[in-house]
Image 1: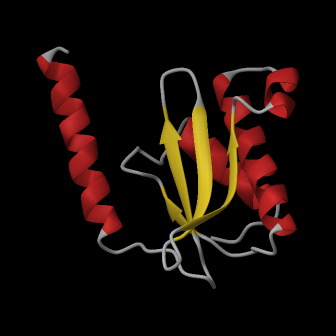
Image 2 (image 1 turned 90 degrees about the vertical axis):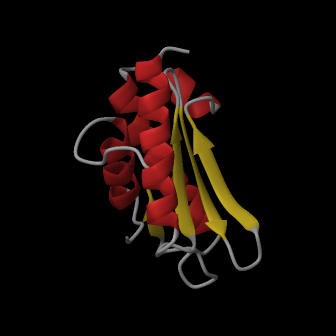
Image 3 (image 1 turned 180 degrees about the horizontal axis):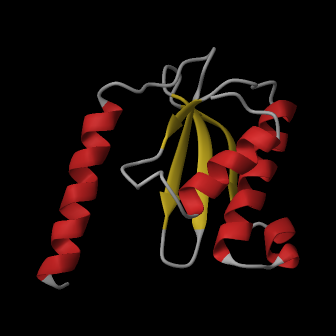
Length: 122
């Protein structure tokens, strides 16, 4: 691992810890956590008080694989799929945990917009 990569990873981990001090998921408003790798994006809705995952979605789901498209398009579809699964689990409001990733553009923002389009409230 190069020093630039490790510095970038360390910075993200610091941001993640700083954000997680203030964000916790409850039964009323669970936490929507996002993980982004170079190829895929994963999202899960977690009730931290019970340590229970309520819903998950990723680009590895069959519905997303069949749809295809760019990574940003797939991220938006993951958000919409997650929102649909949350409504099935009777969750309408969540707290968004971007996991230290930048929010202003790209796949994390697309996932959040897709979740909002699907009916989740942040």
